[in-house]
Image (cartoon, rainbow, N blue to C red; front, side, top):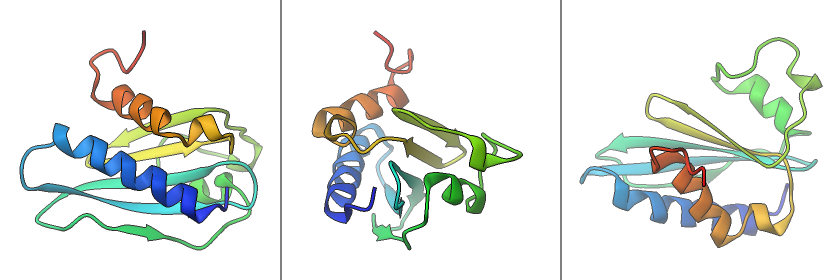
Length: 128
């Protein structure tokens, strides 16, 4: 997805929705990785004493290209052969990586933000 307005809105809503669950003094920075094909990747980093900020990075051909470039331990080998659908969440230390494989509105809506946050903060991972 290369709709920067929609990506920024989702990211800003995600940060605002997650902040109440964090210890006072922690902030969230985000790196948005837009793609020319379906989906996008957003890396959130929880940090102390740094103001929350959102950066939109260079658009890449696909989310798989981003996965090859960022620090991640979720998928190894030939990442180009992997297909993502829906929302995938990867957590590593102080980082949350949201991988969305689709551009449909329901994956980027305010209700999707709430569902994604619940997957992270709920002891059941947001399952119903």
